[in-house]
Length: 434
Image (cartoon, rainbow, N blue to C red; front, top):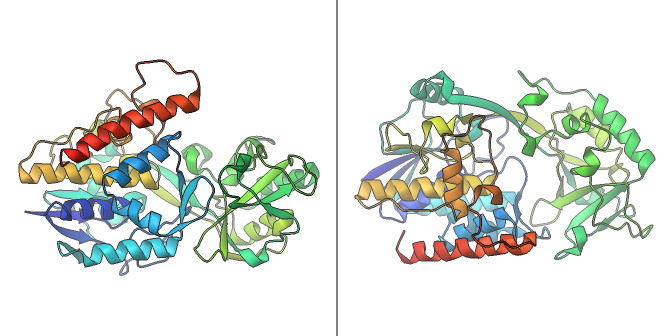
């Protein structure tokens, strides 16, 4: 039996890998490098076009649990992320170039995966998993819309943060520290006093934006909101968001700063850093002008400016089941951000579950049961919940995972107990040969 997978992003590569490891031949279609989007820069698979961070890695947070579930289930994406890890405090961040290269090499070398470098413009007959993500080409996007009917699509906007060289950061004005000194001091912190912050805020809120067709503040998904949009919501909004100073101490004063911009290592060599939370769609010249007002970045060398692009996702609760498959035709499945899961790890998890379910279907085995007590199962149940009226993209969080039967007051202890319960289920599923 042969299964087609459309798209070699995180979800598509994970899906192809899981299918191939279950003795299923895979045709993996990818339009790069023959056709690229404005957000893509590399011909490699699993290109990270926004942050290089896969976020928190502790079991007290939900994405940390989701990572551990995937690790235990032999995820390709998680194994490559671990192998190309760069230090980022309590987060799992990767050398984005090394990560994509490793995923590409592993996928291309698998004997059961055949890569076809061409754009798919029609929905093929199943079995197929469509994982073309938020950057789906216009032709395939139209084909999917026609497949489901025009009401099946929604749109939002996504943004990537700028990158600066490490040597251009003024370390006389910045310092290394992780918030609350958790783990190792892996972030470069750039402080601003009130006067500096006020000048920066005024410049940011009045800076000239690049033209983005159809862009409105209400269309922006909160998790990837451009920094200038966030700033316009109030003078202190940034100070409670990406510029929050809590848990940090400026060694020059011994006190908590008024505002702090954090920089995170973006490659293994430590030569490039990204501005954490600084997704933007300002014009490039304006980015240089405004972001150079951050004192430690007054001489910053920008190796990539922030960009903004449109994302597209399905009205999944009306269309898909908990295995990310078309309710009308279970041999046609979808995966990744186009299903309404938000984030790298969540996209990987959707690719994993869509693939193991598809493998069971084509091999005539019972479908695997990932309950709501697991992060993988909770995500699938969220995107397929027909009671959700205003469906929006969702990061994994403990609120969509089944609560504990017993009450635990301390949040960290409660979250850890939820994670331990989930991993017990995952270990049992792995033992059963899922």
